[in-house]
Amino acid sequence: MVIAYLRVSTGRQHLENQEGEIKHYAESRNMKIDRWVTEVVSGKTEHKNRLLGRSVRHLKKGDILIVTELSRLSRSLHEIMEIMKLCVDVKVAVHSTKDGYIFDDSINSKVLSFAFGLAAEIEHKLNSQRTREAMALRKAEGKHMGRKFGSTPKIQILKSCKGEIAAKLTAGASIMGLCKEYGISYETFRRFKKHFLDIN
Image 1 (tube, rainbow, N blue to C red):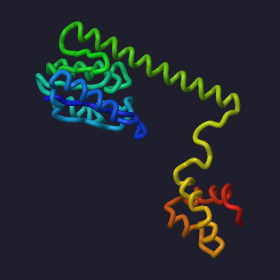
Image 2 (tube, rainbow, N blue to C red; image 1 turned 45 degrees about the vertical axis):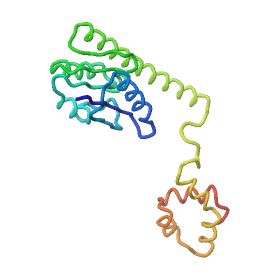
Image 3 (tube, one colour; image 1 turned 90 degrees about the vertical axis):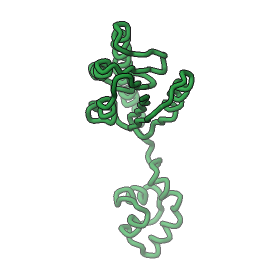
Image 4 (spheres, helix red, strand yellow; image 1 turned 135 degrees about the horizontal axis):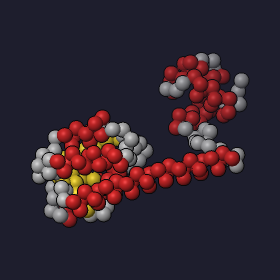
């Protein structure tokens, strides 16, 4: 059985790139993907508490697990090695498409998996550090952090209905009634009214 594993940390990221890369990899080697395992979860979450853990536990001798890179398995070097050991113990091969490596129970594969896992963990920590430093610099320079006020989807919806809402308020509609009608919280409507409506 050939299993392809796809993971992203948040729903804002796209899985299409990983899926396309694995499909291309499999087709170039005449491999048929029997099962796709997809999840949106942080790589910091233990694999035992993810679909990945359940999938690995059901792998058998001769099966193949395909990922685009080892960091898809976990952000922790220790856990990457733990997952690799679980696969090696039952003679399951792990394919990493970005570099074209196949990790099995050979010594070379064990050394490579350790090296790639270590590199993935170091890269993640460096990226996190750079992000924190960049945010600290922006804050020190007095620049706005986070999403620009008024750009949230719900505020955008209210802004697009600004004239209609103003007319309803002028006609005596209650704020609570409008909140229910537009599916927003009282606080969101209060902020919208304060910043975008010219009525009392």
